[in-house]
Image (cartoon, rainbow, N blue to C red; front, side):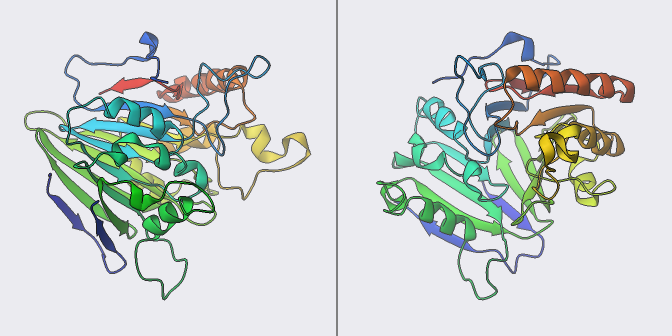
Length: 333
């Protein structure tokens, strides 16, 4: 079990201990510098609701499962969110030699970011261990316990699902994080540092900065900011997360026109952003690569591709590489 070191104002942290389709990898999305260490795999890229591909609405190129990203760093696996894409990741992890250990970081507990957890096969395998972190959101000043655990248990109560969280015998340790917390995970090949910061989303949401520290190698940095609406100026919390990051995964759910007033209604206040603002935040933070994430369920492959093309033109002028997240995409740093 890797030791965990947590710093910050931890007065709101709660800890609860309880024992108890394989994606296609497209070669054109492989990125490697020959000394790769940190590997990012996209298991779910969609926002709001799973969007399966049909003959009239094709999503097979960019994917229809909701948010789940694995980050293999310093010999340890970090999992970002547990949308429906987590089922696919679980099928792959179940092939590994037990016991399995991994650390989850949840951005928030809206359904599209937790709905894959009841289908996570390694959770049903005794001997596996998972540390699960999520934001301490102020649902009630007198609430005691883990909000993340409350949400996952509620999702699997008998009115919603036939299998309870208690029926998953893997060891799960729940911890709620305060703002600007730091979690350190000692992996077999180095140290992983994860920093949290709040984002602008109804009900609250955290973004995360993941740093891989390996002896003799440059520090690799990934910033993850899904479900965030831009402000009138660059967001100081976004800048904290993304400063000089190798990759920024950013909520680009809407086109600029949709956000403003396309189709007769504005998306302002809905908690999501655009690629224009993703590039503004990336430029201000000195980010090298922007990955457009959390695709709108009303966007088929052709719409996502069009937005990616427009963003790449803008990114080229700013010196930032841009690509739209695709289910099964692997980035190696």
